[in-house]
Amino acid sequence: MNSEDISRAVDNAATALIPRIKERLGNDQPVAAVTMGSGLERLADVILDPLEVPYSELPGWPNPTVPGHAGRVAIGTLGGTPVIGLSGRVHLYEGGNAGRTAFYVRVMGELGVQILFLSNAAGAIREDWQPGELMLLTDHINLTGNSPLIGPVVGAENRFPDMTVAYDADLCDIVRTAAAQQGMTLREGIYAAVHGPAFETPAEIRMLRSLGADAVGMSTVPEVITARALGIRCVAVSCLTNFAAGLVERPLDHIELLETTRLVEKDFQRLVEFSVARFA
Image (cartoon, rainbow, N blue to C red):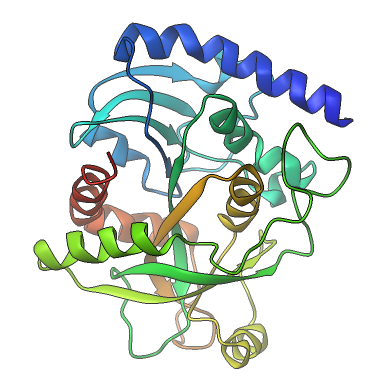
């Protein structure tokens, strides 16, 4: 797909969403988009009186195939702030190029959204952390071997976006403050993104630790790269669902990871709500 085809597909999806946004928000502009990752789709429950639109009703929008990704847009307010909730995402390992994972970010850019709050499930590499804790991303390492910006420049995207501060300092401060006010433990660290879908080997985890990574997952980074190319500010929080391979003897299981997110979803919901309330 060339840049004109991508731009047309993005425009079509945005055009389909505009009347739904107006129906729910009137003349208010969505301030932020909130991406709800593996097992975290119920973060949409804190969006006030949401108008929900299945991805299948939006032209060109990729549908996720992974359990824990509902595949719908939720339009409403969160902590009084107009938002677009994105319940589920597609991953590189589901097929297609990296641009497919970034499609929804380009649609948010077309709609004029200025802030992207991402959540994901990740494996803890630090042995002094615990499953069920939350981690604020301060930086990332892209080990997917891919980028959503490969190919012709799409629209007004920056060909060479500066990734020095991929995660906005002011937004990170807001999330830190929200966590402190709620009495939550909020770890901070570097997220390593890998392609997946296989979990990592113990040797790979030792490599990631030597590179400075604190947690590992299979999402988020392609979207952040695209957002920065569009000038969208980003902040991201991981739910640490498990110890990474080799840190414990028990084998990794995706269903168990989803169960961990269920245990912390209320805390995560409160963190997102209190943070987004301060984005306006």
